Amino acid sequence: MRLNNRSQLAAFTKSADLEYFLEVISRAEYMHEPILSPTKEILDGYKKKELSWEQYETSFLALLAEREVQRTIDRQLFEVPTVLLCSEPTPEHCHRRLVAEYLAEAWGGARIVHL
Image (cartoon, rainbow, N blue to C red):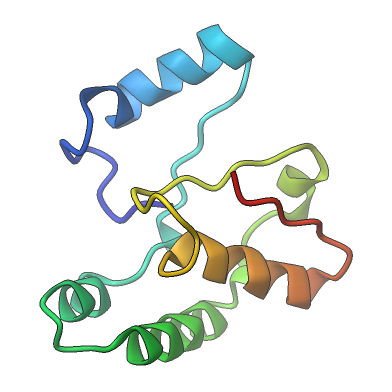
């Protein structure tokens, strides 16, 4: 879900390393889905405090609707336990929560658990 899955937030979170660790530790498959990420402009606007969280949320949800992610993302991917990853430690100000809630509303019947 990250816009840049090669960032140096933590060494093990780079795409190839994360893919390896997920497979070895939990037999999980890694997929990078940039369609679920904000644009650089939206993300930078929020990070630089040019956008409030409310403005970020409105812009990002509009982007998800414009991209029609509920039609673009294969719903079958979510028929098994699925984890949405990003760098935020809590869901309050995180795009993964927005994506999860957006898809849950669009598809119905999803159970969201924040770890």
